[in-house]
Length: 230
Image (tube, rainbow, N blue to C red):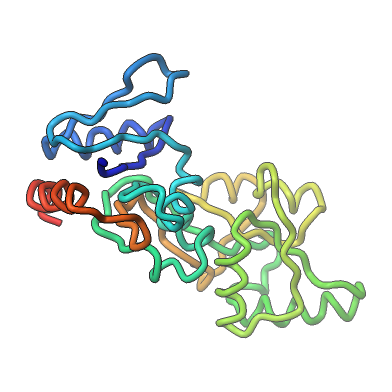
């Protein structure tokens, strides 16, 4: 048996993950071309490196098919119910930073807070006969956040494409989206609510609580904990 480590399979997130582990003496590399998902971990024996999309890793960890995995904290909270009972964060890696926020049209000059949004949503429903639409890919996180702040009379609509364009395209009245700088939201005529931060996300190393931890996996984990000061 071996300890299965899942890391993002492409893009800057993969590159930064490889750099983070490499700086700590564990070299991660592809075994073939960019189209080949085979990969190798060198520096500590007993590690099977698995390349997956960042969105797949939370579920694989929760179901015990990975022992360790690197993914965004937003994806863990969105995709895994009761995530902290199934996963344990070991280290924030310092990259992949982005905020999940609520944003409204810039011309809603009187809407700056969640209380304002709640009032607008109630008025919208009275006027139009249906609930104000908020476009997002993060239904669980957004619903929990809005319920926790007493916002009602809204409906979440799934965004399959560019969420920030849904208001301009008149398929939603507001959005809940991931942003690093806010520039794309502003370019699409949107403004972040002053108290609209739902979650600050970054790449994080997680340990599965549900995976099989035999003697060999525990040995490798001890070596990693010592090497990485986890």
